[in-house]
Amino acid sequence: MPGGPEQESEIYSFGPMGVKICFSRPSTFGWTAKNMTKVTLTNQEIYGTPKSSLVPTKLLPFKSSAQFQVPYNTILGVEHVSLGLWKGVWIQYRDENKTKEVSILCDPTNAHHIPKVYDLLQAAKTGIGQQV
Image 1 (cartoon, one colour):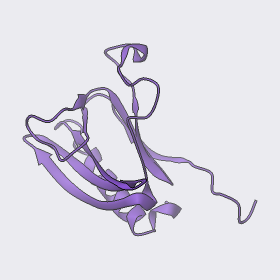
Image 2 (tube, rainbow, N blue to C red):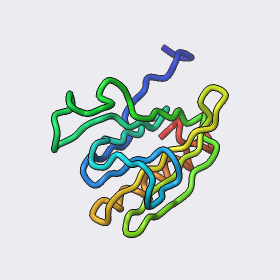
Image 3 (cartoon, rainbow, N blue to C red):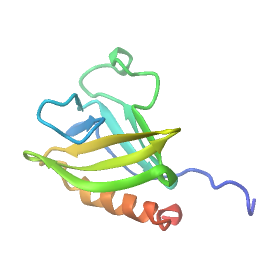
Image 4 (tube, rainbow, N blue to C red):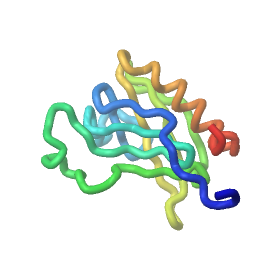
């Protein structure tokens, strides 16, 4: 239906193996969820869902909902980050009246995902990504 809400569709996804999520800028002693998150980019948002190939999903501590969900229109900033051999993107976004952050890091064998994620987020942030 023309003029109606656009249906959400998946553009790109990866993980959980070799993916680490933290809810700040990456740091050596920060809390991370490693090998437990599938990252998905759609035409409207980026989100991480609990998924583990090592542990049944029902045993994960945050099994009932997305670990993070960032609509593109709430993104305030996106940067490349690294922590040792891990490469990633840091996202700052608005959630209600708060500013939040999430970092998505990939180990060296999965680092090829990061440039694609960064490019898609930059495009979405500038409004081009809604049409990707």
